[in-house]
Length: 116
Ligand SMILES: [Zn+2]
Image (cartoon, rainbow, N blue to C red; front, side):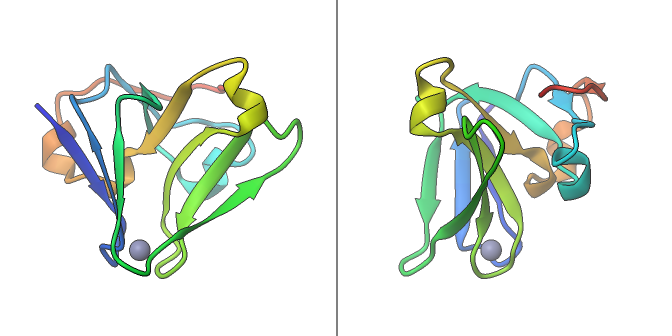
């Protein structure tokens, strides 16, 4: 079943081809502050739609291999994916399942792990 994640104002939508294998309520320093609950995909699997004129801002730090994108309008953290540098190592990305209808996710396993 496809899964759509939409920020609060509706400017940014992400569609993934299936529900995530599990949801990780990541406990790393940035994710627990954002409240990110990630479903993992590869960058090739998902499509990101931005309403006309809408865009995301991004936050990059540390080893600069990963960037967090949040809606410029409502501030919701919608996804993270690798920077160009990070792509050399991994094509994995995270979709913030807090942007998904919770009813869709009731049967998806939850984990609370530290993934750096
Ligand atoms: Zn928004």
